Image 1: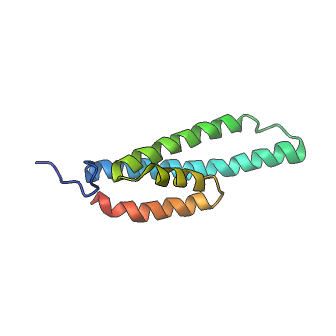
Image 2: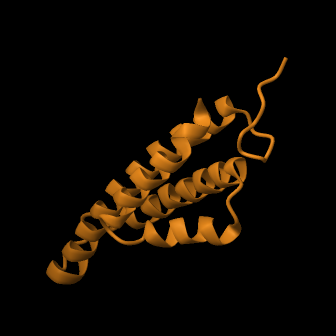
Image 3: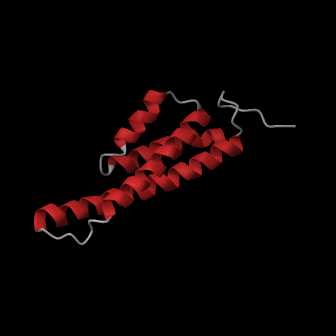
Length: 113
């Protein structure tokens, strides 16, 4: 017997929990990577130091993983494209990314049990 989905998308609570875990980890890593990117920009443009120039493409890759995690979770819980885009845009603002991650976890966590 399969568990009934409370998300309305056919995703089981276990699938939502897995997607939420992936989202949480990728959101935190992307948020921390943003601070390293800010440091890289300060060093490069403020001090003429290119020591972290390699970080920009790494940050871009990390953010793409976060975008995939957001889409994965959003599709499993039934978010519209606008909601997913809003989460990605909010993640571009330092500190707000962490606040949004906590809000999403509070909203989605009840669907995992």
